Image (cartoon, rainbow, N blue to C red; front, side, top):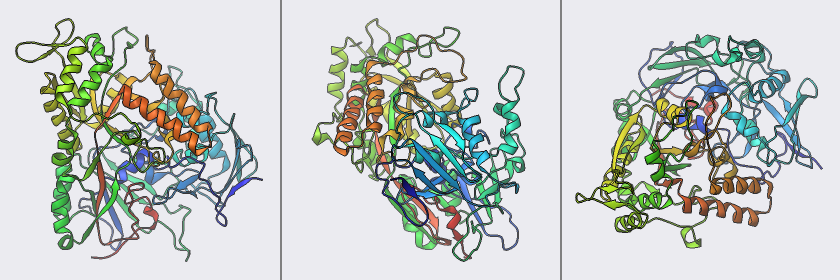
Length: 600
């Protein structure tokens, strides 16, 4: 029999991977807030905020979680932000063959782009074949389309005016989920830029739709279209008149006619604007929770609690021992030797007081993390089941360092085997106060075992470039998450795979980049690769628990990252915003098309 999903009958898709669709773009909506802006009379308006301006208007080239794409585009399917279940989007239905290697999507009738042009199967084929699978276009989203052990890509063909078929080289359960994350792009607007080349032979597409492009020229298929962009200030959107959704009475959606995305880096400034009554919503930090909760009745807003946030919060070292194309090491070889010494990483883990971090920085509104998977995951390996943990023990940390050949001078400063003072720089993004506070505490904790750590606080767009392009960093306090990955760990493959585009602690060569010299993946990294591939091919739940338990144990033993505190997902939203369905999975605005804004 064939597995079918349509509006009339929903099948059991529990064997499929959970949400990638909202992915990084959900992080944008989780940080929503407002600022005053003029608008047309009687025009309904919602104002959101991002801590960082968009780095590009070209979706496949984007590497930042802060952007405009969740407003402008959709994929073939969507994901419910509360349940995580797959739902129709541009495709009204899909069928999966019994061998799990052929998926046929049927597009909705009458789809249009924001410029009024028809959206057809040709756009789907163009997007996948000519952009995502184009080796000349360096997009991180190609990782989603690498299938199983072969790392081969699917083929795609048009069956008729509304149906498109993907053929996979082997069964690959995540594929339908991935089509939610991979938005469809307009062939009529972008084909010429893909087919033409610049003086270096690169597709003109790489220089197309940057943030210097007139916003009105960006064509999408989502609920909104851009109308203006003021760098470092705001992006303004208007309702897309050709958006396909309507309610049961036939009224067009979204109901909100105008949307403003403010660029406000400082969380303190976001809080000031919210408390002054100018804001529709704001992500609630732990330090602001008590104040905002007390003022909620007067301020006419609700503070929503979705439980622990998804994803991981961590501190990690740059384990990359390679050099750039000029032969210059990414990491100072002296530091690299420390970072690649397991006892050093484990000693640092024992030296960090996460209980103090939880109570002082997060005001108790969070949980200490031990694993790359959340406790809600069916694959979570608990400390009681054998997961190695690192409870705060600075004396043990010191002894581990001494046993590894480090030593202390008369000032109790840590020296390495050759007498070099152990000091390095902690990289952290500037836009999130609590994360900077975490880095400050780590600096303090490490000083107690003789390590000098200096802070490098930079804007997130600069941080991303250092992590994933120049690779010139020592230590990083960061986070990473793909909604739904707790239910299906393979969604984290692009982060944990030794060749993944977000394998930041030892990122290897990436398509379209200058060559990297002498890059190697450790044996344990290659074992993680094997486990992830075994997990995606295994359908037996008990066996998958064993596989992903091994993955967690290797991470705990090798410590490429040390997990910190997972804060609660808290969001304040004005009560005039109706139809809200808040969750840690989808945030406050995953169903933006259904939201209404009433008069005060």
